[in-house]
View 1 (cartoon, rainbow, N blue to C red):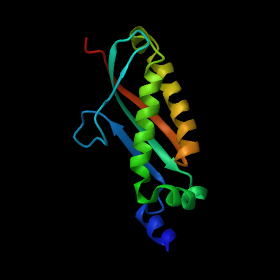
View 2: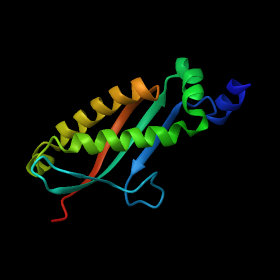
View 3: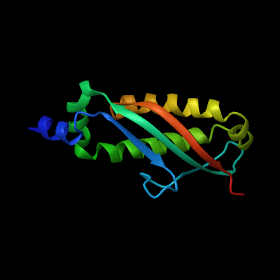
View 4: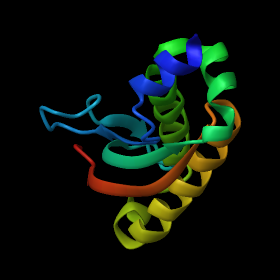
Length: 130
């Protein structure tokens, strides 16, 4: 049944990583957003997540084997939206706080929608092109 195939596919290892960067092995390209003061900001972010083993059945029923794609889509949405809450200046003076805020908000959203928890998030780079 589902459980054997799905569980063996994730190999009873519920931890994984997603990276949005220019790295050739990245899951997706960097995240493009706007700062609170309207400037373009390009963020390279990676995060480690863990699936909630007690919710694997629900995860599979809701998303099938495409859960990771859904997880990436949710993450892009959350992080793009979160970036709009900070000025360009904040990204350089409060980077550690922003990283923590990103992690808390992403974890909250993923826990409720994709039955996953963010274990660790890294704000790899912040680029304000103009």
